[in-house]
Length: 484
Ligand code: ADP
View 1: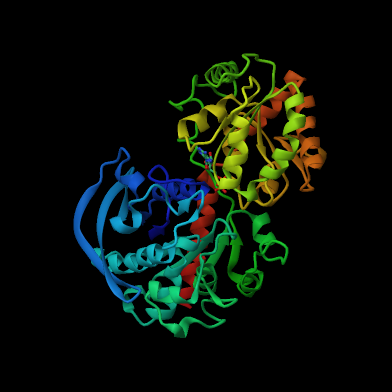
View 2: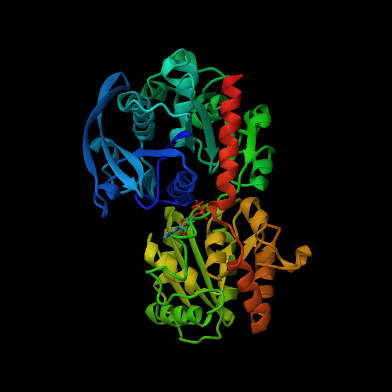
């Protein structure tokens, strides 16, 4: 199959969260199975200045944004042998961040991604690449299925192309004022309830859900949750309407990239049978972060976007209690101003048990996965969650709220499983979170049992070997629909 991935972030080029991990690893798994996979993304400042070989091409394009023809250029790099097309437009993409700063979204995001999506369609023709599948991710690429189905529906170039739309996080929908239609090259005729209109505004994700041939999200539990009023973020009705074509496919991670036995960025490599190497990582990280160097003190790690989704208010409520316990906590995160402020005031207090790191730091994240005993994810909701999958791989035991993909991957003895791999709690309360943490602290005291749980996680398989095949099946379904 010829498959084009359209994603606003792709690891290792640009990353704010799990979408980048998926867009940087699923294409490799599909490529391994013999497909012609290509990726397209914006050429951000961080891509330009990263250590990548970027080629110029002679190709350019022009698309209407707010009634003015805007020019863009195409550049290219590779992910292994996968071509990665980069859409260049300095005015839109040469910025410090991808979507906005801690103070909020960039005010011209409709123009930026309206330009990007229209550009993708134009460039495919210039490249003469007719994909069987265009696989679009999240709101930033949602305009593509909408444009193809509603504007270019008679264009023979796209007549054999099926559109797959993946929702990585339903909370970010690309909602703009009505005027944004012209940023997408669209007129007012699309401002109707069966198209892009949404409570008097424009909603790009709605457009993607309504028009893609098949839709999926990143776990089965989240797929069920988003069709309910409680967790549908206002789009439950639209999702119910498409329920027949809506699927859940659990994310995988790249087991070659996330591999404690070869990871060059951790202090010492180890495997499930050489856990002393994990202890060495703990010792070195304790030293590097100014924590007491004690091998028996449980080290709790948390690596997250600082957003209300991630259960940070539960953590905040528990901090006084946690600081009284014999444990160490290492947090790595960036995000919303509110949380940045809250944690930076804590950061200033000297402590040999608490380390707050308010940066985006790939190398430090790997060291934390490798060094920590427990990994905290008290999420309010979690579409899939990659943190717990990476934690399994590095032998850190997840302590998570049972929601979305966390509920599909983390199993606690209290759930009656024979091979537990973590600790879970149900209610979104500090008490329930504390109950799960304290059970993990208790379990940690029995070294033999604990190591067994560590190994259960390390020996499980959340690679793309499994889910990659589910995407192939989903693509087949989409092709079948357009051939009907
Ligand atoms: P989300 O996509 O909602 O942010 P996921 O758990 O799916 O959450 O994926 C988060 C990814 O981003 C993981 O690879 C995690 O290690 C990484 N990550 C999050 N915050 C940071 C940070 N501050 N520094 C480095 N990596 C981070």
